[in-house]
Image 1 (cartoon, helix red, strand yellow):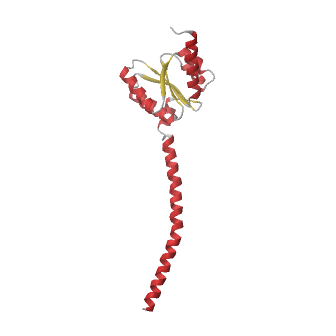
Image 2 (cartoon, one colour):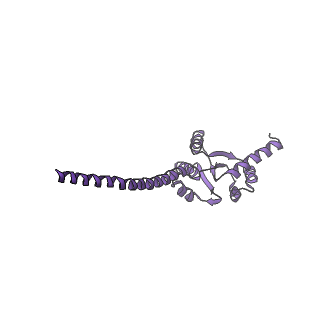
Image 3 (cartoon, rainbow, N blue to C red):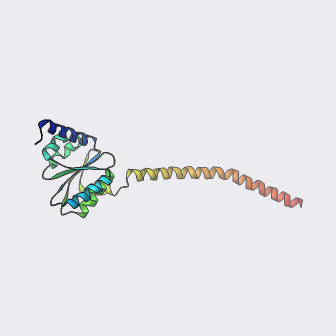
Length: 177
């Protein structure tokens, strides 16, 4: 049995995780096998997400003063929390994929993305978005493409001038002969 000090330490650690989270998903499950649980944990770990089953009373107390306070009424039954500190898209993709594949054992309760409560359909919409890294690479490509076009246009002027000078020289050389 945990001492009061250990319980307080657990509460503070969970509250700190909730405060640092950019996105959170509360899920429930029933009859989940160890194999399915490991599959979910691996998918979430690949997405850079922390995941854990929480005690409801502890989670409600830890949620006070955080963005998860809006979802405190969802801490009922078997509850697990998936938290992402950076990319809500990766978290959304992993949760949406697993909930579609396992609707009989996995139940989405509520999600919070950047301080706003979202439903399952919103999570699926977020999951269809490209990740932050993909968006950055697309922007960098677009910026680089414009710079390449400018460089090509600027280098065309001296090249064209050299071609014209050469053609004039060839014409004068042909007239002299």
